[in-house]
Length: 116
Image 1 (tube, helix red, strand yellow):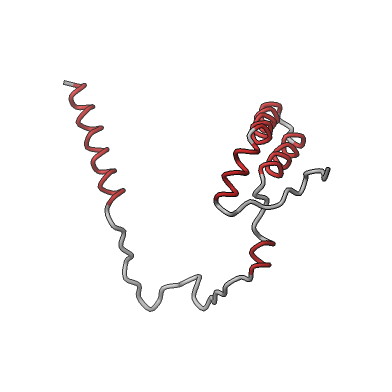
Image 2 (cartoon, one colour):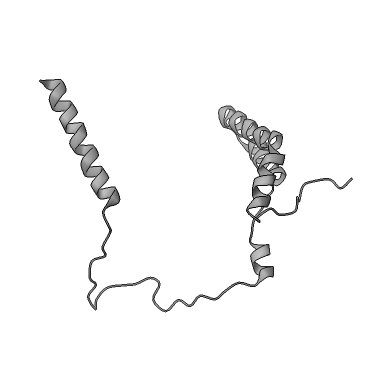
């Protein structure tokens, strides 16, 4: 009896959760006394140079170097080891990751690579 009740409770929770997940969301109507943080904000398109300047380090070697620097700065040995392992993962798989970035047209030049 307890198992049946537990299963039915879990089933009901899953069904309600599913309904909430797939139901459309509606905003409540706002009255005149409401506050909007984005009121009066104007947006403009960025130039190609501005987009390149803020695009970030989307190169696996740069990501590995940044994570490695965080590993060296970490004070907790577990965190330092986890960051070092993650940095090594990015370094070992850099060619695959950079190929994926290239397919998405978001690969940037390597900033930490030594020219040969």
